[in-house]
Image (cartoon, rainbow, N blue to C red; front, top):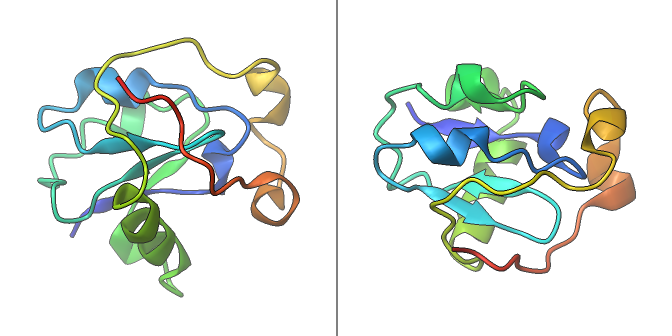
Length: 112
């Protein structure tokens, strides 16, 4: 089992999870983070740290959509190892649904 980042992260990009990850398995896109499935050690410390509740065990991803998205973009985006400010209006977007279709960007972030 690994953990995956879901749609709740899109347009928020809180990085509290990055700060506690012991293996630096987070990767940064323009408007969300993902977890590299081969680097995650399944410790679970990131899950309760996410204010948007965007991190779930891969076993809760019934159709595998988030596992696939995390794996794809972890291979393309830069690694992020330090906490930074969330995106503007992150709190306003945190609970919005349907963000994958509306706002997802495949562009990489800056990384750290």
